[in-house]
Length: 393
Length: 209
Image 1 (cartoon, each protein chain N blue to C red):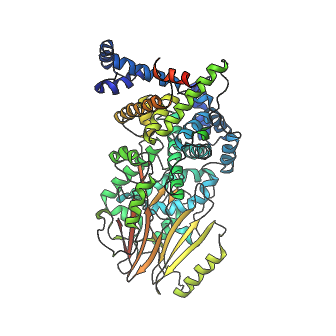
Image 2 (image 1 turned 90 degrees about the vertical axis):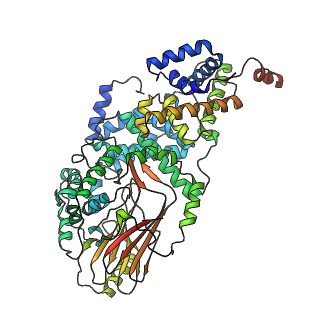
Image 3 (image 1 turned 180 degrees about the vertical axis):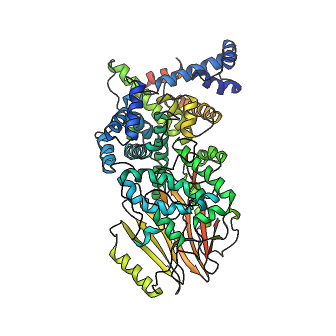
């Protein structure tokens, strides 16, 4: 005895009390004359009754204590914790506008001032700290200023690097950018099922990454999701060669953007910069929790990966580039997840270009925000033009 | 979906206080929801270790994200969403580390010991067997189907709430529930005696004894 295909889905909704009255009436009428569907409905109801009650779940001993220990260690949730974050997040705000311009390309962000360990984001008042990221993150895209008690670092750096275009200037230059910014804030917010009011609603520093993502993509995203390792492997293998000739298809939304400034030349020489980075690598984590992870150079420019340790969830990475004249640029990295950006898998100099790549073996999203697509993010910095392009392969 | 014995006002109060940084209020919420969050994580992750980690991560995310929670969905829905995300993140991390192994499907791991419902040993054994078969069936489903069914049947969310939690449209929720349930039904028909008609399976079983 078999149920009727055309009623199967309706029977489920019926059993769940999710039918409209009209549907319910139709189902009842059908059930009266169909033994197969009656039997199926009975099975559904039996199954439903057999599911356990979550209150019967045995939670591992000490679970709540563990959570609370972590919560209290994290103490003052978005205050003390934010302190260190601010140094990353505020300069990041300056570049948010770029991220925003690149709808569907998660990961435009940068962390400027933290890299040299002399971040000036003066965060003194905890209350202000809690409020500041909200204002500055959202404010930047449209009003060109970093606000709040700790906003000075980002803006002064931006201004002091005339050769590079600041994130804010970029934001101001394109109407589309500002608009996209609103959308982005919105999607970041909705991730926490938070309000639609973008201006009043900052992305959560730790859990919410920003990344533009069309709602319709997001809606279907979970279908792809089970992070199927098998599927992922294929793509990784195909795209992981790394040294393919560059510039096959520059993404139209993200081609030849000006570099974002992190700091102007400080008068040091190339050799001194190299020596300083080596010293920082040798010294390990500094008092700000920052360490230099690695660097690569071509005789005039130096790129290095920095890592901010001790942040919740995962360490935060930054990728920086000293141009020949000592100007420091802050390079974008894609979001790896809600907690931060990805670390570059590989980076190298190729003639007059600096190239770096990050490969994701699966698509990542959270709610309506896309962190990254599956594939290799291939970034190319034109050292002469001081622009950067992204190609996702 | 509301935990028992608690007025919505009390929960709202705790959420408000926790949002303003009151860790004690948050602790109350943790106690209120730990079973539900862990129960969800356990089904999604498939083993207690991962479930514990993901559930913990979900609560931490909640604590950190609370200032941005404005109550447009219920706290429960929001928390389940964070749990789902934490599980997905964790499984993805693990699958990367372990290669293609994927989540453990070992039902023994589920460790779903139930308190004695006060029935005779016979009924208790039957009930336990049925539960175990359901759990095994859930683990045999695709993660998409499993997630909606768990939220529906264990957490008792409405289709709307599920769609909110998972950011799916209601039509997708509906079809996943229907397809998931049919798969589960087929699994139970093969592995359990839930649907055993008077004839075949029951008599087979007797014959074995």
